[in-house]
Image 1 (cartoon, rainbow, N blue to C red):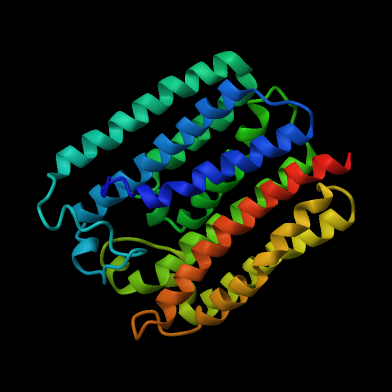
Image 2: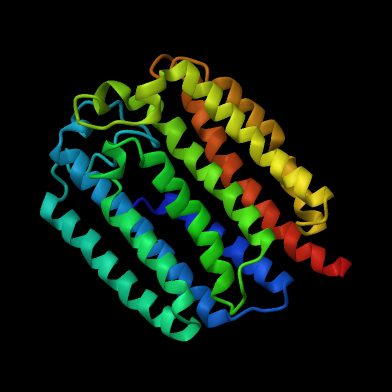
Length: 292
């Protein structure tokens, strides 16, 4: 349970709920497909988590990071509580099970879901070793644990892709992009010799904090503009309730990542904002049904 980082599996669950809520708003909901797709997302997220722990142990990155609940891996491999090959086998086991369940979901829904599934599996399998080493880590995270899950969780209910689904998937992608971006700040000194290349290393923490803040508030702009335009369900505006948390995360992103407790509090606020905003949006979508 520690190795697969159970507390961090809330995100794929919430993304599934957002996509499912929007499908319900459009008049379709398949309970079996909903839970099957959620299982695929959870298993692929576990794959990413465990492979990240495995490869960061192999490259030595996790021997040189300041370990917190957001950085430095689980510490399980460094403490010798598990062997690297045990973690690797667990990762590949989850990946294979996800592939089997995913194939069954494609069988139930149709081949239209296959490209999404394949792309998501590529991101899960190669995130640490390829994408995170070639300036694509944040983008692959945003797509693989933001855009694609929302679209997939919507389309598994037999619905064609709609503009409101695309908009919410983009917002989710930005939030997950930012989740990874902010958590990269404290690891710069360990990531560089470990072979990683990312936006924080390229821009430096101050410019990366500006990018993080801009992207964070762009999500609220997306929710506000497209809800007022009538594209999104009207009560999606409930998601704006987390703006104070976003201001806290954005302001603390400019503090020194490895000095004191301020940056860590910003990371906590970031996670809270990402999860609660999307949960509120899901609640708003379902509540909007009462207005139809």
